[in-house]
Length: 142
Image 1 (cartoon, helix red, strand yellow):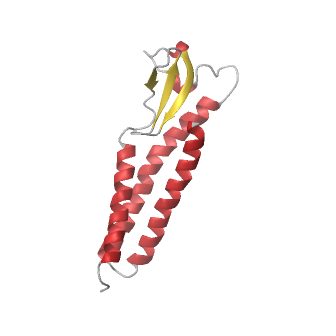
Image 2: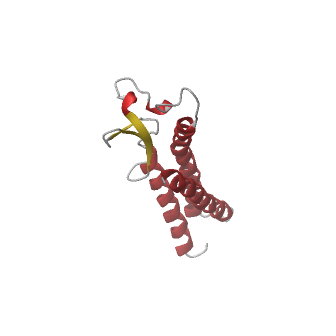
């Protein structure tokens, strides 16, 4: 279930950020400062989203690999954690995107593969880019 949500969430987020970036580039040619700010913020949001999705998708791919050495999943093999009790993994999408290993008793622990600062950073930059683009459309043309 989480994989399907992630597969749907990632392209949608990339498309929204790309649309903001395209609109901001077109507006920046008019030399309007709010639109140029939206361009810079959109680029920064794309970079932050890459910092978020790259380790997450890497963890998912390595956890899904089969074979003789596939249990417990590779991302769940952390020193000091009960790796032999891992039965599944979970992709956390709210409030912070992360990769967790589920234990036999239903509890879970975060693997630390996804930086926790990347989610609020990507969301904050995307909102700021949208706000800058909205502000540039609200002011009269120069």
